[in-house]
Amino acid sequence: MSDDVKWICVYCGSGEGVNPAYAAAAEELGAAMAAARIGLVYGGGAVGLMGVLARTVLANGGRVTGIIPDFLIAKEHILHDLQDVIVTDTMHERKQLMFERADAFVALPGGIGTLEELVEQLTWAQLGQHAKPIVLADIDRFWQPLLALIDHMRREAFIRSGLNIEFEVVAHAAEIVPAVLAMAGRRAARAAEETVASKF
Image (tube, rainbow, N blue to C red):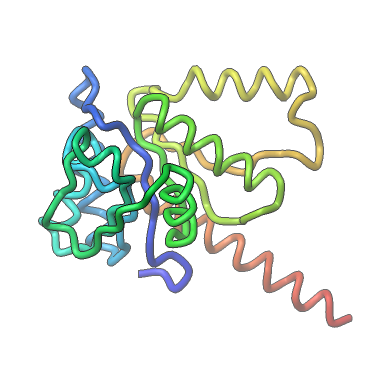
């Protein structure tokens, strides 16, 4: 386990999608996180990719914290085997707690909710509100339309110098944990260099 990355927040679908590769990636990521002794912070549901991921982490001896708003319990069905379940009053409270408890963020395939949570973290990072690693798991090129839109924003000068977005894109589940740890290592090294430079 990395000293800098003890918990990863994973955003992903409350459905499994039509492509079996998505659920397979969730399983592979869950096993890899447990093997690396990195805990999962996620939306608390038992359905879709969320359920596949959380059950796999648990089945491999890992730790899982689920955070779910009260009004979603009936729809997403809390996974009752979790070590830690937090029920919130609002989505805003849920997202803030997920942010606070995570050392990094990963986006697997998902729908509007997954996209919204991912974009919020990209925005906060762009505005200097956090420097936590963000990794897009581009399983079977799922995130290519979003990446094309981000490139379009850059070309149109809506993402300008000083407002860049730092994130990693990986194509395979096996690359996710190494990418998170590599980003965390680079940022820790930069922070150390800046500390040394500030003393002179």
